[in-house]
Every structure is written in structure tokens, then in C-alpha cells.
Length: 187
Image (tube, rainbow, N blue to C red):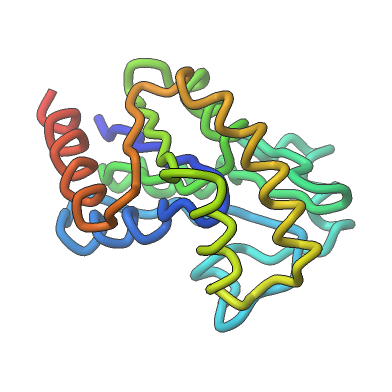
């Protein structure tokens, strides 16, 4: 039976980089593409990075109970996991990898229990996180400060995850995540 790997972290902590590194090294993983109600950023593509839905379509899927989990992450900005996406991956026997917000990660862990490993990627500090977000050049200063405020709250949830990986060096963080994930998949 396939297993579930959940990576959560404040925006800019490096979870997506870690997930991509694991995906490139472990062939039995498949990424669960989340849905969101925001517009694509930079070079993001629908069906590859996210399923980009209008707010109306997202809300309709909430009403029809199509989501395994969903959150209004920012006012009028929804993110969620379509249950059909997860079941499609699991039906192939692949292990499902999530790159989701903190509350969504905890909800998925609660749903799958021992079949899931939840990993919180911790930034070394809020100042380093702010610097990383600024270097991305994808958000306004106002949007970055919203993300920082949210990050401060999200960090308080870290101890609810199975594992905390501190990303003060991306190569070390990837190596630590690889050890934890391969050990979990062998169980």
C-alpha cells in the first residue's frame, strides 16, 4: 500500500526545493498537485504547479466535498487537495508527496494516520525567511510582510509534526529529509 509524505513550512522555508530534490532521487514518489484560487506566479503552469481555479470553482468544489482538505490561507485565497488527485496516485501504487501549508499538512496527517509521515521544514530565523522571500522577487513588500506574519504563527505548529528539518543549509536539509523519508518508506 502506498504511503503519504507531507511537507509543510512557512512560505520561503525551502520545502519545495527539498521536495523536488527527493522526487528527482526516489522513483516511487509522485507529487500531489494542490488546487488554489490565486493566479499563477512567474512561470507556474496549470496542472503542473497547481490546479488554478477561480474562486467560484474552488467554492463549488468545497460544497461538493471534492477536497481531502482545504484552507482559506489568506482572505479570498484558497488552497486545497483534491481527493481525486490523491486517489489517482495511490491507485498506481505510488507514494504520494504533499507540499502543503501547515494546517493542511496536519489535516492530511490526521486523515491518513500512520500511513503518513509529516515533516515540518523550519527556517533558521524569521529574518532569514524575510530575506529569502525578498530574493524571490515574486511578491510585493506588503505581500512579503503578510507571509512573515503568517510564518510566525505557522512555526508554532512545528512540534505537531512527526519530524522537524531545519533548513539553514539546503544540501544538509535535503540529506536529512532523504534519510527520514527512505527509512519511513522501508517500514
